[in-house]
Image 1 (cartoon, helix red, strand yellow):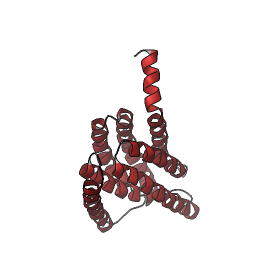
Image 2 (image 1 turned 60 degrees about the vertical axis):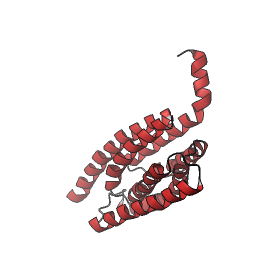
Image 3 (image 1 turned 90 degrees about the horizontal axis):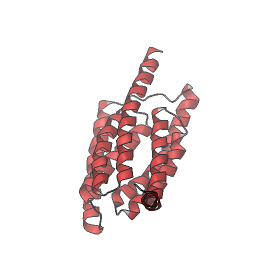
Image 4 (image 1 turned 135 degrees about the horizontal axis):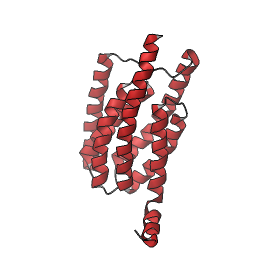
Length: 200
């Protein structure tokens, strides 16, 4: 690629590049159970809300704005846990609460998909809505410190890679492929933390 083509590409994709870099930093910090991940989540979500608005992925845009609210809750919840226990400890949910959240994710997917299909020019209304619904579940589980959040993100992020390739958001597709790897890292690190908690 010539310098002229590279300059043109950067001029067209600089905003997406910044959003991707901030988002990657955010997920890596979350795998480390770092409280700093939450303000970074807020910044990354605001950046991607604008990116998705421009790409007509309105469910994703809405999801990013909801991420901001969840990040505020997660920041507070992790901070409270750290004050009480000395570290951000991995939570252990009941099977019933996990099944309830999966059902709520399905309901949110159907409601949002119907609305996007009939009231907007969304590019992929049903598929995008389903990913949004289960991203909300994953974010909730992350805020609650459930290790299951990483397993769900592995599945959701693989599907997002396909969606973003379809929409020619190449940088974002690469970012979500990196997210898959980071989620695997999250599973490993949080399992270690959970074993250490149980040992003590």
